[in-house]
Image 1 (cartoon, rainbow, N blue to C red):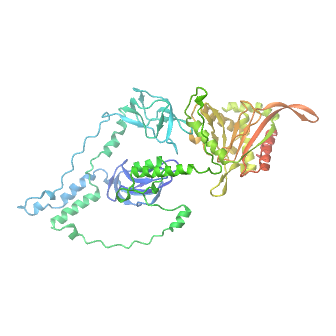
Image 2 (cartoon, helix red, strand yellow):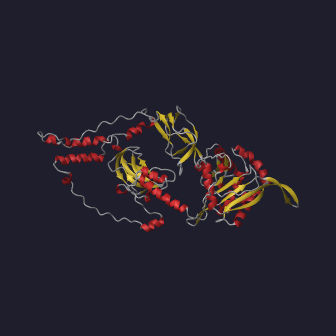
Length: 580
């Protein structure tokens, strides 16, 4: 007995609602065959089977919530080889009416026609295959084609990078999922490409898919174990001169056991309200998802309330009309309408350039942070004269490990120690639940200036690493940022951010907090300044510090203490070994 369990469906997808079950006990299934439709938070997907055999027991029912790893059904692998032989064996086991009465001519209806021969499997060279843009990550539906790495006539293999795509989060290399020789390229550099769009076609690219294709295109006339038993039963009752109604007594209605169900209103309040699956095809659900329509809110006009594409479009128009009406109302606090721009061409020549990928996402995120968070910036100075001597002393050790002992690498360790002393700076605000989320881990993002805009790779578990390890990891992230190799996962999960403009200049600035974090530390260029020490001026190396914070959670006095603690840690590195 083999169990088929719900496989992994994608990032952060742990469960889904069973919309439709495509198998029943006794049905023959093969690997790759779609066996169920599952609705997740993102889409309605068909789930293929990873096992072959005859279904013995189904352990779920339509409407259930199914978790990844849950057993869906069991199969008996012993019956997978020749399910089509069952009706022949069943017919041989039952005597035919013509054998019982010689004078009577056999009725055509009593004989079971042999299954037609299977159609020939499609040849691998029967036509070009297509390579489409695959799913790139959560909430990523399109990207700008930065570089194409193939051309007509190029030979590609599975896993080979074929293009560079710039999304809202990063520039990623997209590998090929097919092998063969490129016949036609259907996109060009600079275009916006959507997930599922055809990128190029291949000659000879179907060879790897020949075996699954034979399985999928097997004749639909094959008979499962349950169907074969039914054919044998029909032959038997015909031999006795009875109908199915005469041979089978009517079913007695069974009393359904009482099932506990949560009251509807309580489910709505708790957010666990169960909604019946909406009758709609997968492509209709995809359309609703892409244009931001909740399929449950759409009233279907088809048979049985089935929702069509037109229903979704009509409902979307209603929403747009309502949004247009709401847009004419006064803006809410913290949300401001963009003023209309003048016609700049009246005063001279202008050029308009599309706001692409990273720059567009940066603009949206920073505007959201500025409009959401009441910013305050605290400034201070740190005397890093002694620290600079130590940095120069230990720089060769970091270089041997493959890193560079920079002030930013040291600041990572200093800030990690400070966040342990001041946990409110390592938190987030959940406004809807009116809660403060204190994180028990310290992941610090470091703002990187690239030719594509501002990127913030995140170094994880900073408090558990020494300065040399942090220097090496920071160097690796800097190289990935320059080479456009950063992935969306490299820039997620931060709890605090450091931005260093010292390599450019300046004596201070106001960094914007990276929402949903609550604070960010800015470093400016250090310079030699005269300091009054022991009755005389001495030249000291001074590092300007700028701390921006969310005033909803952090008070000014706490911000001053936090920044002073950081300044003293820079001035007295021994504090890190004592307190951090």
